[in-house]
Length: 352
Ligand SMILES: *Cc1c(COP(=O)(O)O)cnc(C)c1O
Image (cartoon, rainbow, N blue to C red; front, side, top):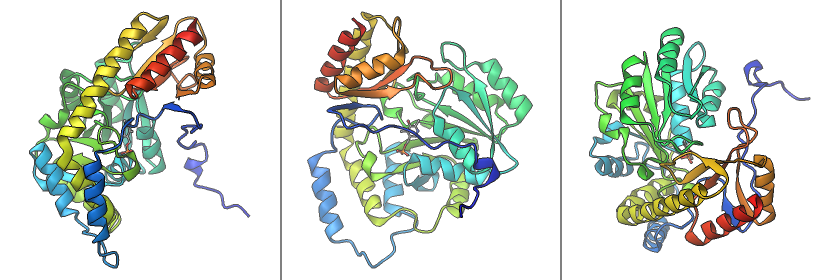
């Protein structure tokens, strides 16, 4: 006997990102390189001394303190969870849920709407302009007509790569009737951050992750920066001891290697510019990216065929061609320079 799921979940589809075994994997926006060996050794040393019979520090004091110091904020303004997706889920559980509305501006990160729907919240999807930039008239209309308790932005936006200009974030804050969330999973790749706008009086939060710039997707660690009253509410909703002891150590130690992280980011940014320069000389349209991936659309071939052609050459990119508003689009994660060589050569062959 199968028990029926909640009525409102029946139409829901899970998160899909096909994992095919290939030699060049450029589909999930991970870092192509590992964290520093010194981090791995320090982590192993601390793990060997861990008191496994004890619950972890429930407030993750050391980790929060290190994150707060990195951003020049107070530890009470930092919330930490198992990946920024769990941060977003806790946020929506706390402020949205049944009877409340969440706004997104599409195309954007699919999990914003997905997580909100799972909590029972109503999701209103506003439209971006044809070039995927934010349409402030649409933002005003949605905020006035739908009164969202949470308005999501994503900068740089996934999957378009576009950075949300500061003026847009200010404009959204001016009209949003509730909380504004800026998802900065790729924040370090961009030239500005909304973290500078955080203060105790403003209903604005910024979320970040260790999964991309910190080369730690395997650790599942993310955080939120925002007013301390809001962080205190999130702390009530999250499960006790949700952040295990080893993860708290992993994150705290990672923050001792900021220079390594920044060097990796600089390398990826240079490679991203190289890929975009190559695209400019190919029959593809692409969107200027501020992240570690580039969205592109072949001009003369169906996106699906190009995706398959790349796969036949052992290169996996993200197939966005079937996603709403993204007909024929593909998204490539910036890899190592060798991986990008293979990708660009394969793309040139497929398009020829
Ligand atoms: C990758 C990604 C995340 C996910 O982060 P985790 O910390 O791995 O859960 C969040 N937001 C966006 C926009 C992303 O692309």
